[in-house]
Structure formats: C-alpha cells, structure tokens
Image (cartoon, rainbow, N blue to C red; front, side, top):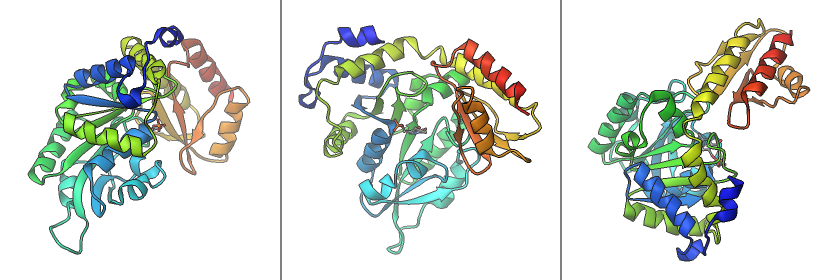
Length: 323
Ligand SMILES: Cc1ncc(COP(=O)(O)O)c(C=O)c1O
C-alpha cells in the first residue's frame, strides 16, 4: 500500500485534476453500477454530505435508534442539515419495511416532512449484523411509494457482501446513495466514498467543499483505496473466521453473558456477575489487546487486517486464562 502511495500520480483535486482520485471515484461508481462517486476523508463526512444532499431543513430522517448517523456523528443531522430524526427500535440495528411505512409522517403542517430513510449495513451496534437483501427491497418499495430517498451507511458494506456472497451492484440498484469506508476492514489510513447519480454527486461535491473536505494532492491517499479494492476485499472472510473463533472462546466463560450473533468482524458481548466490563477490558489491555465498552454491560471487539491468525491465537489463550 505504501508503494502504491509513492507511485501515485497526483494533481489538485479541488480543480478536478488529480488522476488517482478520479480513477478511484470512477472505479467505485462502476463497482456499484452507479453514475458517479465522491472521495471524502471519512465515513462521517460521506454520511453527513449524503444526508445534506437528500434533505431540506425541517425534513425528517428515518433510521434505527442505534445508527451511527444518529449516535456517533456529533448530532450532525441537526447541525449540518437542520433535519429531525424518527428513531426506530430495530433488531440488531436493522429496521423493516413495515416499521418504515408506519413511521412516515402524514402531509400535515404540524409534522416534519419525511424525506429520507437511512440504513446501516453491517450494523455496528448490532454486532456487525447484515441485512437480508429482500428486506432492503421491501424498504425501497416503501420509499418509492412515498417519494422518499434511501441512503445506505455502508461503512462496512464489503464485510456484508463477503458474508452474504452478494455483489456491490446488488446493492447499488436499491439505494439512491451509498457511503462505504476504505479506512476500516479494507485497511486504508483514511477515506470513504459516496456513490450516486451524476446530479446527486455534483451537489454532494459542492457540500464537501462547504464542509472543508476539498483536498488537493489527495491522490496519495486515493492510491491506498485503489490498492485496498484490489487486494483487501476477499480477505475480509478471514476476519469473520477470526471473530467466530474468539466468540467460541468467550462463550465458554461464566462471566460472559449474551454474545450478539457473530456474522462478520465484530463481536459484542455482555460481561456479567462480579466482573465488570472495565475490569475485563483492563485484563486484556495488560496483554496488549485493545477493546471498547459498548454500553454499561457490553464490550466490543473488532477484527481487521492488522490482526493476524497468530494474534487471534494469543487472544484466545489470554481469554482462556482470565477467570
Ligand atoms: C457504521 C459506521 N458508519 C460510519 C462510520 C464513520 O466512519 P469514520 O470513522 O471514517 O468517520 C463508522 C465508524 O466507526 C461506523 O461504524
């Protein structure tokens, strides 16, 4: 990846003159069967641009209560778009077509105007859970019937595609916009792409500039994205196998309660009894294993290309030894 960065041809991308950024955007759009793409520094910026480009102030966005766009983007929907949210109680971060339909506001001056539905796949707080594509088809039907736009926060979409054996085009035809991250399991230092139709991406590019996301010789970074799309997609299944192995160890410990179903590279599990999540996290930290609290009772582990097979064996051994 570093070699790809050294060799990158660059130019000023704010003027549309960086050939490597253009190549990455063209490749991303083609992968999803979309017309155009926009490169941004982060998944948060891509999502926030996406929402701003789909909504007007006073609109309402429907999403699951645990969505990253609502929980972890600093109130960006309100701050950047002046929109309100309708939060749904989904299951493992996934919502249904019936829930969406029931949440659409009537055409009533008292109510915010529902204009956008945002899904997350895989769902971070759902333990890396994946949507069934038929559910997404149902949600898109509801959106079409009610003139709503459908956005996907696909920060870890490639994990879902590998786990479900689906293609980017299967999803490209179901959404008006998709953001996906290069900086997570795909292993880039920064970067996210937003794909959509030409007109939408033209609007999104203006918003990126307003957000301060216009970049100059960004081709050095875009080269990491091209490298990752060539080399780091298929290997995501190793991360999924690693996650299952670690979950297999965790489920044998009496201080571990519910483990959310492990479908991809995330393990979210409950710590119960006399041990607290903070104590467990400290025990692991002493062995250089870094994890995160997800709630007062839950811990999250994430697997990625920096965690090798050998490291996974060490993690299993350490967990075995913690009483
Ligand atoms: C589901 C989801 N969406 C978006 C993001 C934002 O990505 P970034 O950290 O690049 O802003 C994350 C980051 O963890 C995420 O988990």
